[in-house]
Image (cartoon, rainbow, N blue to C red):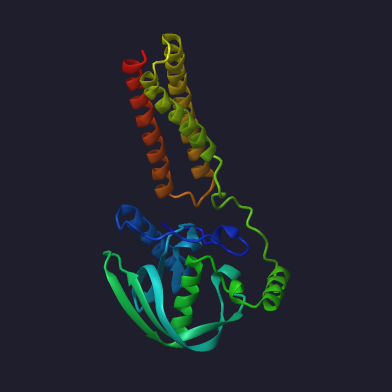
Length: 272
């Protein structure tokens, strides 16, 4: 599915992307979205973070093929040169930065196999380096000396680059974390209540804790309902809330509700 590309000064691109650990359905969906977006915009390369996926994955078009590079790393580099580059993130504003012509790279392909790649071409090395930068919280401007960076920012402002206010991406951090935080605290004290009979406490005290467990069960259930509704609201409002993120939200709910039911059942037999 074609996704919305991030443009300067959208700061949601400035995060350290996490490594790709699984090459299952979520990875395939992310890879398809990157390739579909590249085809839609006729791009030669694209990093996952540029369309809202915070993972160390980029795709480069090589001939007629779209080659994915997961968890890429530069092992060695040599032959520095000045590279004048245009990035879609900066709306084709040319910026000159230092690159290396000769690169030795390791990465994982779509089959989770470790691969080695050698580059000894200025244009190819600059393209690879630019996409790699995005995976590690770096853009072309970040590579400039402070004085030149200020000049570049002023030039971009003069061209009318303004913040994106179209609600196209999820705001970090999401406010739905508060639902989870409160639920986790309630679950912690539910777990503590199960250990109280070990301390020879009075029946009245244990009865009071059992009442807490019953109230906490209801509150946690309501919090998870609220979490679900708010997560769906975000998924509709922010275009970059992908199906993978929605799946993670469901996983959060299931984990809390399983613990909620387990603790409540245990409390019935231990404290009830």
